[in-house]
Image (cartoon, rainbow, N blue to C red; front, side, top):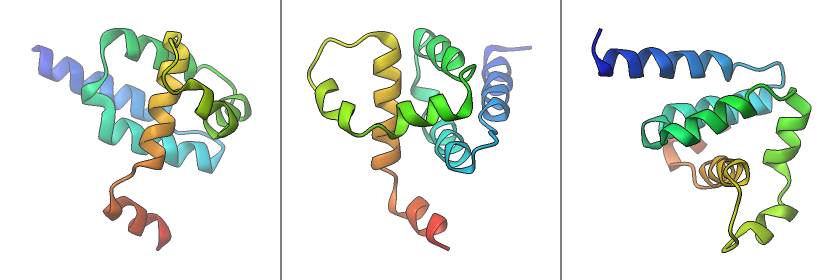
Length: 104
């Protein structure tokens, strides 16, 4: 098995783990994996993997907490905060085609 096949298998594993009981979280995480997985570093993948172990409500609060987002800008962030910021940013900067599909 080559490295590309391993990476594809790992992406499918992450996509499966992003299937959540909380629909809103499911949508955000599935979209994030689909559009941003290839750009994540090994360290970021490890942090994302750890975040996926959180209960849905706790994870949703972290992603949906817009008041903490302003403080994170420009600050030296921990790896976990940086990953949450990436997910938030991806959620807010979705391509127009994705926004239209969600509206339907």
